[in-house]
Amino acid sequence: MTKKKFYVSTPIYYPNDIPHLGHAYTTIAADALSRWQKLLGKDVFFLTGTDEHGKKLQNAAESKGLKPKEFIDKIVPKFKEAWKKLNINYSYFIRTTDKSHEDVVSKVLQKVYDSGEIYKGTYSGLYCTSCEAYYTEQDAPSLKCPVHESKLEKLEEESYFFKLSKYQNFLLDLYKKNPDFISPKGKRKEVINRVKEGLKDLSISRSSFNWGVPLPFDKTHVTYVWFDALLNYYSATRLGKNKKYWPADVHLIGKDILWFHTVYWPAMLKSAGIELPKKVFAHGWWTVLNKKMGKSAGNAIKIDELISYAGTDATRYFLLRQTPFGDDGDFSKETLIEKYNQELANKLGNLVSRVSTLAEKYGLKESISVLSSAKIFESVEKYLENLEFDKALNEIFSFIDSCNEYIQQKKPWETKDSKVLYELSNAIKDISILLSPFIPETSEKISKVFNFPLTLKALKTPLKITKIKKSPILFEKIK
Ligand code: MSP
Image (cartoon, rainbow, N blue to C red; front, top):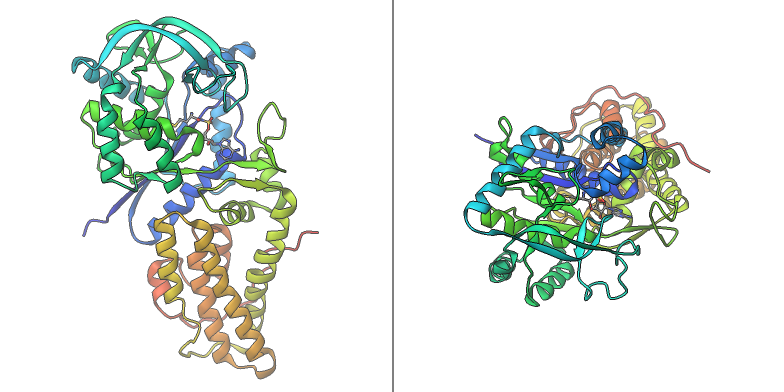
């Protein structure tokens, strides 16, 4: 039987600087989702990568006295290292300077051009290079970028335009027929309202610099970086055996880039005759101690710092547990450590430590357990279907609470009851399997102590009795 496929992507990040908490957030969410879908038995394609063209990158390279590609080649490995440290198990890392990607961009542009949906004109208006986005005076009456608060640049240059305006009805119809296409719901409304106001044609080329994919029909222009970047999700599936993965099941993105993904992207695909992705989910933004995180504020938390507080699993756990995925959250080292101590160390760590210590002493004896995880699994499945990571984790932790209550109540250290210890060990098996998408390293350690594989089958079958050895400390308390 062929496995059902599942395709999840992160945005491709600008390698103008090394990755930080914001980048880690989407990537961890995508990794947890990908691991969960794999656990369910799907054939998963998880794509991430870097967005390497455009003025922003050219400027960053120039400021270091380097050519764009030389500069980027130094930063891209930092992303790959960061993802390794965060235990991110992506299927493919795409770079928009890959020839295979550039070829797809050219082909799509040529197709859209041949169908008469690209024309030449002059772009005259405002631009934010940090966002790589066009703004109107209506969007930014103070002439400052609403995201970066920096002064917008006035552009006036020859440009090719994509007839985005003709896609208004198509898009409204798409949102109506596919209510989940834009998630969460609040964000969906925002997009619909803006699209209803009307769409302007989109400038899709720049002629005042050259760091980009040349237009196949006019080499004096380079492709607008977003037209190029969005196509990464599709171009990655044109390689080798990846074709079967298109269309994507879900693009995970931050709320700031929702418009590009839910307006430009489906219109571009429709125009090129390519099937549309099924869902775009926009998560919220993290502030740090209630301040906007950014380079200029000097408070961007880089990956090494992030994991230095309490380790990789705690970081993954905290980011997904602390706030609902669609909401904004506030990060502080103190709250991370508090959660680590209270939940990972006191609840999960203690349970595993107590049960494994007693099981080493008194052994296990098979018994039908009252600690069933069947309902928990169903809820977790439902929550993760809707990307409610926080609720899924809550559910698993409420099961951990039940186990901790059970051990208190049954006192196996007094009774030496190896049946109770079996019930608890079996529950620990289920907990670790359910947690494995979130804290893979810890789940792996627990699975070695109680000797079970981290699979769906093992979740659904009782633990096999083996000799148990006391678990190493999973989460050393942090002061
Ligand atoms: N290159 C584009 C994406 C192209 S996708 C075809 C881009 N790159 S980015 O590096 O600037 O940002 C990538 C992602 O990081 C965005 O989804 C953005 O929302 C996210 N974050 C950046 N700062 C963030 C926080 N402070 N909090 C959460 N996510 C944030 O945009």
